[in-house]
Amino acid sequence: MASAHSDPPVVRWPVGAAIGILSGGVAIGAATLAAGLFGAGTSPIFAVGAAAVDASPEGLKRFAIDTFGTDDKTALLLGIGIVLISAAVILGIVSMDRPRAGVIGLIVLGMIGAVAAVTRPANGLVAAVPSLVGTAAGLIAYVWLRGRSGLHPIVRRESAEPEPAMPTGLDRRRFLFGSAVVGGLALASGFAGEYLVRRSEASVSRSAVRLPSIADTGRPTPATADLHVSGELPFITPNDAFYRVDTALFVPAVQTNGWTLTVHGMVDRPMTLTFEELIARPLIERDITLCCVSNEVGGRYIGNARWTGTPLAPLLQEAGVQPGVTQLVSRSTDGFTTGTPASVALDGRDAMLVVAMNGEPLPLQHGFPVRMLIPGLYGYESACKWITDIEATTYEAYSAYWVERGWAERVLIKTGSRIDVPKHGATVAAGAVTIAGVAWAQHRGISAVDIQIDDGPWSPARLGAQDTIDTWRQWRYDWQATAGSHTITVRATDGDGAVQTTAVAQPFPSGATGLHRIDVTAT
Image 1 (cartoon, rainbow, N blue to C red):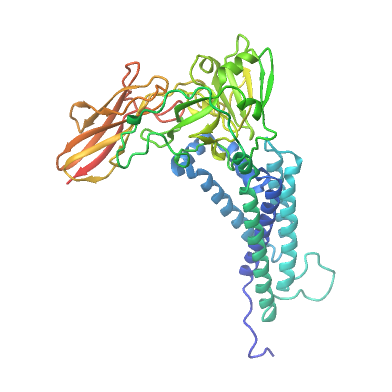
Image 2: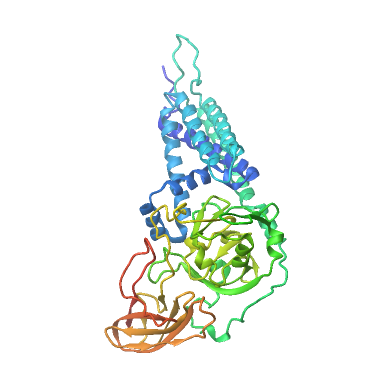
């Protein structure tokens, strides 16, 4: 007869789900810790995420950027986490009656991570180690937790005795204690690994960079280029506010020691430069506005900074670019490629290999130690971060990363303008209202900006001083607002006299067009 004080039977599925989640957590934590020692690119989570980015159809990538903006990578990692948790729960529950399913599931997930890590462009076979370490740790945790719960062993002996039932009483307490221990190990190893991954030696390398004197600092930024309107970003975008759009799920940890740039392909004299040799060349400093081709009308994927680097054209001329070269293919340390029109890179504009941004070495997320930058071209055509290779070739011979996915092969930045103040949907006081924003047409400059209130006439805005034709211009317009709802529209005229088009086009495949409009209410 059962004791009147016996514990109620344990519900099976929560125990199985807990075993699955905790075993998976230990696997991920151990793999992250190992990746902290072998390099962030070997992390199975990052490797699988990067592979997913490469394999995603173009429409899905555009949806992610449009929906999540610069948080698209965080959203992807969150999605991977949800998938892993779901898989762990399912495997844990299934393994209650089929214990080998848990073993097989952990091994399969570990192999997926190992294959993804090994096949990343910058990795080798050693990149599989974190995934293998994580798999081994997860299996140990899985077997140990099953033992603490009193479940039958994974390999059962032939016996006429019935398998033990789910535990109650003391076994439950033993399982909960064991779960706490395993959970603590998972968290501790995960946090330690994350710290090691982020405490990149590249940060130490960046801190040690000492740039030589700059041979050509260009003209100083005019004091009146910034109109100092409240709510408007400064004329020079701070590094921490500068937009970031790239395919790198994790920031590559590249050190100056060991970094090289190779120039090859259709050149007479292939060359390889170290970082020290690169910065020993004459350096220039220029204000240049950089814009992403995925920027919507009125969007935020644009910024203006003071860049320091060595001119690109003299380096290419030393290499001896051959007749017939139409494209420069730049490769990043993570395998990403950009395709630059060779004629644009060599036409005398301030194309450069950048080593500093706003007076300090390039931030890691913006391409440390070296990136390319060519004014007048969208970033996907020229602004290769973490650059290690330039190949002189033709468009017929090679399609770069985004061109292969349907984006335009060759396109110049389109004339654009944006209203920053007031915000769309704002309520303002009737009377004097300041309208302000920026306009850009890199390598052509901005000659005028006009504002339209509702269906009224176009009126000229006041421009900030022009810095160079490669930077945006701030503008402001003083409006006497009457009570009611109003639509404000802006348009720009570039330095060649061409007025910004009213034709509406989405960013894909060659950049957005159309006029930026906002609605406000004056009371």
